[in-house]
Length: 139
Image (cartoon, rainbow, N blue to C red; front, side, top):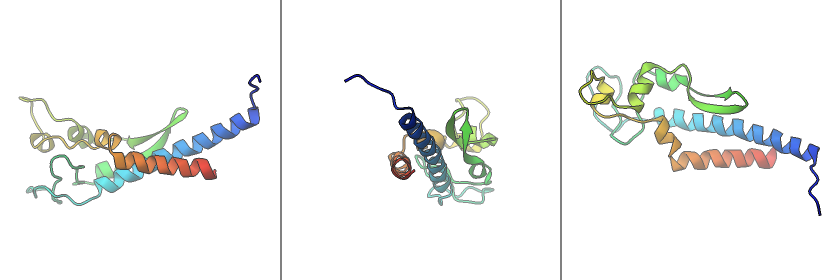
């Protein structure tokens, strides 16, 4: 039997996929805000308001700027999540300064990747998948 495209079905699936994509990006941003808002288990450094994160953990918010910048937004025809209007510390936390360069406190004690860590976090992927699946089933 030859394939016959169903325009109504195609439109319905594309609409559901768009809703699921938006929900997935919003869930990823919510997950990231939760992780960045957790208490630290590392050192308490002078001059910082909160206990820092331990190596390998999500960074702990010290100024609130990174946490406030986390959002999900449309990006062209797709949805994206991350730090919009990112503060300078977003880069310094994600990537350490190379050896021998002027360093910031974050990179002096090791980077605290937050976005790349989230992208490889199994718990985040599971939450995003579940949210998208729920939207696809019920949209």
